[in-house]
Picture 1: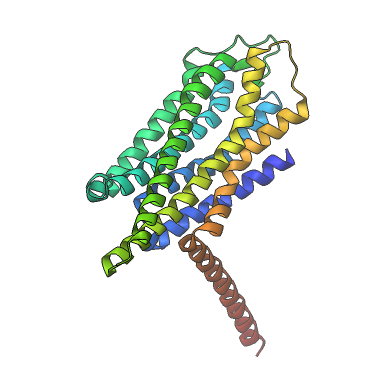
Picture 2 (picture 1 turned 60 degrees about the vertical axis):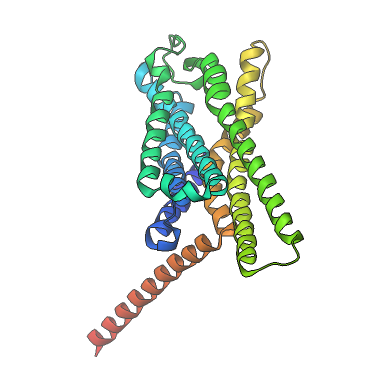
Length: 307
Protein backbone atom coordinates (compact mmCIF):
# COMPACT_ATOMS: atom_id res chain seq x y z
CA UNK A 1 0.00 0.00 0.00
CA UNK A 2 2.89 2.37 0.80
CA UNK A 3 4.42 1.69 -2.62
CA UNK A 4 1.05 2.30 -4.31
CA UNK A 5 0.64 5.64 -2.53
CA UNK A 6 4.15 6.78 -3.52
CA UNK A 7 3.47 5.79 -7.15
CA UNK A 8 0.11 7.60 -7.05
CA UNK A 9 1.75 10.81 -5.80
CA UNK A 10 4.61 10.69 -8.33
CA UNK A 11 2.24 9.86 -11.18
CA UNK A 12 -0.16 12.68 -10.37
CA UNK A 13 2.44 15.40 -9.77
CA UNK A 14 4.79 14.36 -12.60
CA UNK A 15 2.10 14.14 -15.26
CA UNK A 16 0.51 17.40 -14.12
CA UNK A 17 3.93 18.94 -14.82
CA UNK A 18 3.82 17.45 -18.33
CA UNK A 19 0.41 19.01 -19.01
CA UNK A 20 1.52 22.34 -17.52
CA UNK A 21 4.71 22.33 -19.61
CA UNK A 22 2.76 21.87 -22.84
CA UNK A 23 0.29 24.53 -21.72
CA UNK A 24 2.88 27.24 -21.04
CA UNK A 25 5.44 26.46 -23.77
CA UNK A 26 4.21 27.16 -27.29
CA UNK A 27 7.09 25.16 -28.78
CA UNK A 28 5.71 22.05 -27.08
CA UNK A 29 2.25 22.45 -28.60
CA UNK A 30 2.78 19.90 -31.36
CA UNK A 31 0.49 17.13 -32.54
CA UNK A 32 2.85 14.53 -31.03
CA UNK A 33 2.70 16.25 -27.66
CA UNK A 34 -1.10 16.45 -27.78
CA UNK A 35 -1.08 12.65 -27.74
CA UNK A 36 1.51 12.67 -24.94
CA UNK A 37 -0.79 14.98 -22.96
CA UNK A 38 -3.60 12.47 -23.48
CA UNK A 39 -1.26 9.80 -22.14
CA UNK A 40 -0.37 12.06 -19.20
CA UNK A 41 -4.07 12.64 -18.40
CA UNK A 42 -4.58 8.86 -18.31
CA UNK A 43 -1.61 8.54 -15.94
CA UNK A 44 -2.95 11.34 -13.73
CA UNK A 45 -6.22 9.43 -13.50
CA UNK A 46 -4.28 6.27 -12.61
CA UNK A 47 -2.61 8.10 -9.73
CA UNK A 48 -5.66 10.00 -8.56
CA UNK A 49 -8.41 7.45 -9.23
CA UNK A 50 -7.33 3.96 -10.31
CA UNK A 51 -4.72 3.32 -7.61
CA UNK A 52 -7.07 4.40 -4.76
CA UNK A 53 -9.71 2.10 -6.29
CA UNK A 54 -7.14 -0.72 -6.47
CA UNK A 55 -6.21 -0.22 -2.82
CA UNK A 56 -9.88 -0.39 -1.79
CA UNK A 57 -10.58 -3.52 -3.86
CA UNK A 58 -7.44 -5.15 -2.43
CA UNK A 59 -9.24 -4.87 0.92
CA UNK A 60 -12.43 -6.32 -0.58
CA UNK A 61 -14.26 -2.98 -0.62
CA UNK A 62 -17.06 -2.46 -1.59
CA UNK A 63 -18.94 -5.52 -0.29
CA UNK A 64 -22.26 -6.78 -1.69
CA UNK A 65 -22.31 -4.18 -4.48
CA UNK A 66 -21.33 -6.03 -7.65
CA UNK A 67 -21.72 -3.23 -10.19
CA UNK A 68 -19.83 -0.67 -8.12
CA UNK A 69 -17.13 -3.29 -7.61
CA UNK A 70 -16.92 -3.97 -11.36
CA UNK A 71 -16.82 -0.25 -12.12
CA UNK A 72 -13.92 0.30 -9.70
CA UNK A 73 -12.04 -2.67 -11.14
CA UNK A 74 -12.73 -1.50 -14.71
CA UNK A 75 -11.24 1.97 -14.16
CA UNK A 76 -7.65 0.80 -14.50
CA UNK A 77 -8.53 -1.28 -17.57
CA UNK A 78 -10.06 1.81 -19.23
CA UNK A 79 -7.06 3.99 -18.43
CA UNK A 80 -4.56 1.35 -19.57
CA UNK A 81 -6.43 1.02 -22.84
CA UNK A 82 -6.44 4.79 -23.27
CA UNK A 83 -2.65 4.80 -22.75
CA UNK A 84 -2.20 2.09 -25.39
CA UNK A 85 -4.33 4.00 -27.90
CA UNK A 86 -2.37 7.20 -27.17
CA UNK A 87 0.91 5.37 -27.79
CA UNK A 88 -0.53 3.92 -31.00
CA UNK A 89 -1.61 7.40 -32.12
CA UNK A 90 1.94 8.69 -31.48
CA UNK A 91 3.44 5.83 -33.52
CA UNK A 92 1.06 6.41 -36.45
CA UNK A 93 1.70 10.17 -36.29
CA UNK A 94 5.48 9.62 -36.46
CA UNK A 95 4.96 7.18 -39.35
CA UNK A 96 3.00 9.80 -41.30
CA UNK A 97 5.60 12.48 -40.54
CA UNK A 98 8.38 10.36 -42.03
CA UNK A 99 6.68 8.43 -44.84
CA UNK A 100 4.10 11.05 -45.94
CA UNK A 101 5.84 14.36 -45.18
CA UNK A 102 3.98 16.36 -47.85
CA UNK A 103 0.55 15.23 -46.62
CA UNK A 104 1.44 15.27 -42.93
CA UNK A 105 0.33 18.85 -42.20
CA UNK A 106 -2.96 18.22 -43.98
CA UNK A 107 -3.70 14.98 -42.14
CA UNK A 108 -2.29 15.76 -38.70
CA UNK A 109 -3.90 19.09 -37.87
CA UNK A 110 -4.55 20.01 -34.22
CA UNK A 111 -8.28 19.55 -34.87
CA UNK A 112 -7.77 16.05 -36.23
CA UNK A 113 -5.49 15.24 -33.29
CA UNK A 114 -8.21 16.25 -30.83
CA UNK A 115 -10.75 14.12 -32.72
CA UNK A 116 -8.40 11.12 -32.59
CA UNK A 117 -7.91 11.64 -28.85
CA UNK A 118 -11.67 11.77 -28.27
CA UNK A 119 -12.16 8.56 -30.28
CA UNK A 120 -9.40 6.77 -28.35
CA UNK A 121 -10.95 7.72 -25.01
CA UNK A 122 -14.43 6.60 -26.10
CA UNK A 123 -13.07 3.26 -27.33
CA UNK A 124 -11.06 2.77 -24.13
CA UNK A 125 -14.17 3.57 -22.08
CA UNK A 126 -16.24 0.99 -23.97
CA UNK A 127 -13.56 -1.71 -23.74
CA UNK A 128 -13.15 -1.12 -20.01
CA UNK A 129 -16.92 -1.36 -19.45
CA UNK A 130 -17.23 -4.81 -21.07
CA UNK A 131 -17.26 -6.58 -17.65
CA UNK A 132 -20.20 -4.39 -16.60
CA UNK A 133 -22.07 -5.58 -19.69
CA UNK A 134 -22.14 -9.13 -18.34
CA UNK A 135 -18.67 -10.62 -18.88
CA UNK A 136 -17.83 -11.28 -15.22
CA UNK A 137 -17.71 -14.11 -12.70
CA UNK A 138 -20.53 -14.90 -10.32
CA UNK A 139 -19.44 -13.15 -7.12
CA UNK A 140 -18.84 -15.24 -3.98
CA UNK A 141 -21.38 -15.28 -1.17
CA UNK A 142 -19.01 -13.29 1.03
CA UNK A 143 -19.53 -10.32 -1.32
CA UNK A 144 -15.89 -9.23 -1.17
CA UNK A 145 -14.71 -7.19 -4.17
CA UNK A 146 -11.49 -9.01 -5.11
CA UNK A 147 -10.24 -8.84 -8.70
CA UNK A 148 -9.77 -12.62 -9.14
CA UNK A 149 -13.21 -13.31 -7.63
CA UNK A 150 -15.14 -10.99 -9.94
CA UNK A 151 -13.27 -10.37 -13.22
CA UNK A 152 -13.38 -13.24 -15.69
CA UNK A 153 -9.86 -14.28 -16.73
CA UNK A 154 -11.10 -15.22 -20.22
CA UNK A 155 -11.98 -11.53 -20.68
CA UNK A 156 -8.60 -10.40 -19.31
CA UNK A 157 -6.56 -12.82 -21.43
CA UNK A 158 -8.38 -13.37 -24.72
CA UNK A 159 -10.15 -10.03 -25.14
CA UNK A 160 -8.14 -7.52 -23.11
CA UNK A 161 -4.60 -8.89 -23.51
CA UNK A 162 -4.52 -10.67 -26.88
CA UNK A 163 -6.93 -8.38 -28.76
CA UNK A 164 -6.65 -4.97 -27.08
CA UNK A 165 -3.10 -4.91 -25.67
CA UNK A 166 -0.83 -7.34 -27.50
CA UNK A 167 -2.10 -6.61 -31.02
CA UNK A 168 -1.58 -2.81 -30.78
CA UNK A 169 1.83 -3.37 -29.17
CA UNK A 170 2.95 -5.61 -32.05
CA UNK A 171 1.71 -3.04 -34.57
CA UNK A 172 3.60 -0.26 -32.77
CA UNK A 173 6.86 -2.23 -32.62
CA UNK A 174 6.57 -2.93 -36.35
CA UNK A 175 5.93 0.77 -37.07
CA UNK A 176 8.98 1.89 -35.08
CA UNK A 177 11.12 -0.85 -36.67
CA UNK A 178 10.19 0.44 -40.12
CA UNK A 179 10.84 4.04 -39.03
CA UNK A 180 14.32 3.22 -37.69
CA UNK A 181 15.30 1.18 -40.75
CA UNK A 182 14.08 3.83 -43.19
CA UNK A 183 15.63 6.81 -41.40
CA UNK A 184 18.99 5.07 -40.98
CA UNK A 185 18.99 4.13 -44.67
CA UNK A 186 18.26 7.71 -45.71
CA UNK A 187 20.93 9.15 -43.39
CA UNK A 188 23.53 6.72 -44.78
CA UNK A 189 22.54 7.53 -48.36
CA UNK A 190 22.87 11.26 -47.75
CA UNK A 191 26.22 10.75 -46.01
CA UNK A 192 27.50 8.63 -48.92
CA UNK A 193 26.87 11.43 -51.42
CA UNK A 194 30.10 13.37 -51.72
CA UNK A 195 28.69 16.65 -52.98
CA UNK A 196 26.43 17.70 -50.16
CA UNK A 197 24.69 20.98 -50.76
CA UNK A 198 22.86 23.06 -48.20
CA UNK A 199 19.57 21.31 -48.95
CA UNK A 200 21.14 17.89 -48.40
CA UNK A 201 22.72 19.00 -45.13
CA UNK A 202 19.38 20.28 -43.88
CA UNK A 203 17.70 17.05 -44.88
CA UNK A 204 20.32 15.00 -43.03
CA UNK A 205 19.87 17.14 -39.93
CA UNK A 206 16.10 16.73 -40.18
CA UNK A 207 16.47 12.93 -40.46
CA UNK A 208 18.68 12.87 -37.37
CA UNK A 209 16.10 14.88 -35.42
CA UNK A 210 13.38 12.46 -36.52
CA UNK A 211 15.53 9.54 -35.38
CA UNK A 212 16.12 11.16 -31.99
CA UNK A 213 12.41 11.89 -31.51
CA UNK A 214 11.41 8.39 -32.59
CA UNK A 215 13.97 6.87 -30.20
CA UNK A 216 12.59 8.85 -27.25
CA UNK A 217 9.00 7.90 -28.09
CA UNK A 218 9.99 4.27 -28.61
CA UNK A 219 11.46 4.26 -25.09
CA UNK A 220 8.04 5.32 -23.76
CA UNK A 221 6.50 2.35 -25.57
CA UNK A 222 9.27 -0.01 -24.43
CA UNK A 223 8.85 0.96 -20.77
CA UNK A 224 5.08 0.52 -21.05
CA UNK A 225 5.62 -2.99 -22.43
CA UNK A 226 8.17 -3.94 -19.77
CA UNK A 227 5.89 -2.70 -16.98
CA UNK A 228 2.65 -4.32 -18.17
CA UNK A 229 3.61 -7.61 -19.85
CA UNK A 230 4.57 -9.45 -16.61
CA UNK A 231 1.08 -8.97 -15.12
CA UNK A 232 -0.61 -10.11 -18.32
CA UNK A 233 1.66 -13.18 -18.47
CA UNK A 234 0.60 -14.04 -14.92
CA UNK A 235 -3.06 -13.68 -15.95
CA UNK A 236 -2.42 -16.09 -18.84
CA UNK A 237 -0.77 -18.51 -16.43
CA UNK A 238 -3.73 -18.36 -14.03
CA UNK A 239 -6.20 -19.01 -16.86
CA UNK A 240 -4.32 -21.76 -18.68
CA UNK A 241 -3.15 -23.53 -15.52
CA UNK A 242 -5.96 -23.17 -12.94
CA UNK A 243 -4.38 -25.60 -10.48
CA UNK A 244 -1.05 -23.78 -10.52
CA UNK A 245 -0.30 -21.19 -7.87
CA UNK A 246 1.45 -17.86 -8.33
CA UNK A 247 3.53 -16.67 -5.34
CA UNK A 248 1.83 -13.66 -3.77
CA UNK A 249 5.04 -11.53 -3.67
CA UNK A 250 5.47 -12.11 -7.43
CA UNK A 251 1.87 -11.11 -8.15
CA UNK A 252 2.13 -7.99 -5.98
CA UNK A 253 5.43 -7.02 -7.64
CA UNK A 254 3.83 -7.35 -11.09
CA UNK A 255 0.86 -5.21 -10.02
CA UNK A 256 3.12 -2.51 -8.55
CA UNK A 257 5.32 -2.57 -11.67
CA UNK A 258 2.28 -2.05 -13.91
CA UNK A 259 1.11 0.90 -11.82
CA UNK A 260 4.65 2.34 -11.69
CA UNK A 261 4.57 2.84 -15.45
CA UNK A 262 2.28 5.83 -14.90
CA UNK A 263 5.02 7.59 -12.93
CA UNK A 264 8.05 7.02 -15.18
CA UNK A 265 7.15 9.00 -18.32
CA UNK A 266 7.78 12.50 -16.88
CA UNK A 267 11.27 11.40 -15.82
CA UNK A 268 11.87 10.00 -19.31
CA UNK A 269 10.72 13.25 -20.96
CA UNK A 270 13.00 15.27 -18.67
CA UNK A 271 15.96 13.01 -19.44
CA UNK A 272 15.52 12.55 -23.20
CA UNK A 273 13.68 15.66 -24.47
CA UNK A 274 15.37 19.06 -24.12
CA UNK A 275 12.18 21.10 -24.63
CA UNK A 276 10.43 19.30 -21.77
CA UNK A 277 13.51 19.53 -19.57
CA UNK A 278 13.74 23.30 -20.09
CA UNK A 279 10.03 23.73 -19.41
CA UNK A 280 10.25 21.71 -16.19
CA UNK A 281 13.21 23.85 -15.07
CA UNK A 282 11.27 27.02 -15.89
CA UNK A 283 8.28 25.81 -13.85
CA UNK A 284 10.47 24.96 -10.85
CA UNK A 285 12.38 28.24 -11.09
CA UNK A 286 9.12 30.18 -11.36
CA UNK A 287 7.77 28.46 -8.25
CA UNK A 288 11.04 29.11 -6.42
CA UNK A 289 11.12 32.78 -7.41
CA UNK A 290 7.47 33.18 -6.38
CA UNK A 291 8.15 31.55 -3.01
CA UNK A 292 11.21 33.77 -2.43
CA UNK A 293 9.21 36.85 -3.43
CA UNK A 294 6.45 35.89 -0.97
CA UNK A 295 9.04 35.41 1.78
CA UNK A 296 10.59 38.78 0.97
CA UNK A 297 7.16 40.44 1.08
CA UNK A 298 6.39 38.82 4.42
CA UNK A 299 9.75 39.91 5.86
CA UNK A 300 9.31 43.41 4.52
CA UNK A 301 5.81 43.63 5.92
CA UNK A 302 7.01 42.46 9.33
CA UNK A 303 9.87 44.97 9.32
CA UNK A 304 7.48 47.81 8.45
CA UNK A 305 5.11 46.76 11.18
CA UNK A 306 7.94 46.66 13.74
CA UNK A 307 9.17 50.10 12.77
